[in-house]
Image 1 (cartoon, rainbow, N blue to C red):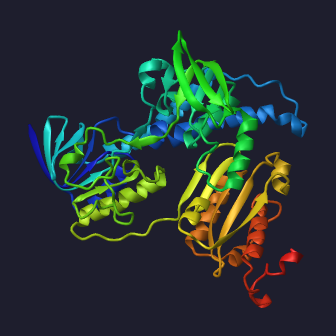
Image 2 (image 1 turned 90 degrees about the vertical axis):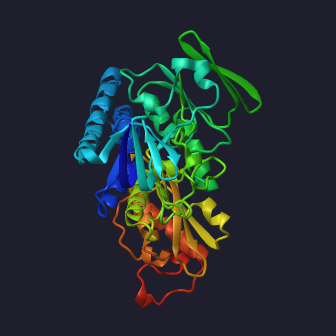
Amino acid sequence: MNHLNVDVAIIGAGSAGMSAYRAARAHTDRIVVIEGGAYGTTCARVGCMPSKLLIAAADAAHAVAMAGRFGVVTAPAAIDGVAVMRRVREERDRFVGFVVEAVEAWPEAHRLRGHARFVAQHELDVGGHTRVTAGRIVIATGSRPHVPAGWRETLGDRLVVNDDVFAWTDLPASVAVVGTGVIGLELSLALARLGVRVRLFGRSGRVGPLTDPDVAAKARAIVGAALDASLDAHDLMPTRHGAGVTLRWTENGTRHEEDFEYVLAATGRIPALDGLGLEHAGVPLDEHGVPQAGRHTRRVGRSHVFIAGDASDEAALLHEASDEGRIAGDNAGRYPDTIVRPRRTPLTVVFSDPQIALAGESHAQLLARGARFAAGSASFDDQGRSRVMGRNLGIVRVYGEADSGRFLGAEMIGPAAEHIGHLLAWAVQHGLTVQQMLDSPFYHPVVEEGVRTALRELKAALDLPAPPLAGCLDCAPAAAV
């Protein structure tokens, strides 16, 4: 067996691991990154990039289908599933190639292949061929799809997860998508627009990450109109039949049954910590066996172990994983000194159509911490620019702090949510007040004017003392706006 002694060992070469490597290397060259699978991040290989490629194809098909409302006459769209999936795979492989090139450009001595397992607090067994002794260890093993118990055994190759979708060489005839989170929403809507018969299954009526009752209700109506959706399905039971699957479920007290070619389990992702031997790591674990780290240091307790990215079971987003990797790698590199690092304002985007965005604190988070806040809202159903584009669906809800008037966050479903979400997150991060946001420029005609309408309603609900007229531009009495 080979032996390797390093200052920092990083387990995982995904988004978090790559950021951790770059940050730790600023402090030491005695470093190794251990990877047991193929190089290439979850985002590039099976996540954000291939899913957006599929969504782009779906958007193109939808544009053709909806052209008639603009007076543009087209022939019915013909979907070439083989060509669609070929482009998805080819472009996906291109993105993955960039990641692989970046990792393989690291010094060979800094790369070690094999599955890592703790055998002692400072020792890792890698693939049975190398024993690594490390002063500090960063866990960046990512996540894996969660599949309900027994489904793999029952359904065999008729069960797929999002990782499998992007290996398809053709589009299937029908898919049951189970799960209304980000993955389920994005893939079900994209596949339906590409001519696949889809039914989306959820529980308790929840759609995506939305928590505001008004926005969630609007999202349920929009999704229900866009495709077949059973958002409050109970007792879901899949069974294999020949080359397909039969799903039985209860909804509104009635038992239903439908056949599909595949079941896509989009029932969440869980930290990929299996077989890591965390019982030998000497670190505290939560009830799910996940090491708990400080949000601003990524250090697990008072140990020499750090954790970053999806492995920590917090926000499974690329920008969060990269930030956590940077913090973990920097602190592992400078250990025993650690620096408390700031975190960015939370931002979540779902690339459904219309898109969903959450910026800053969600409605549920504000309620949970007992915040004193008010809300304002605006509909996109009749908003000027949205109607011009034929994309007039949705609602935005914005939240402001009582007394101070500080902007706290927003939830929305509507056009251009990926862009509006950024603007609202920046406003939260920079501590802007609702009045300061209203005094910022809004061009005409743009979708963002809907946000201004919501902010004006929020300002009236906050009922703050009127600022001096010379100090603001948009500060007329609420009844006059």
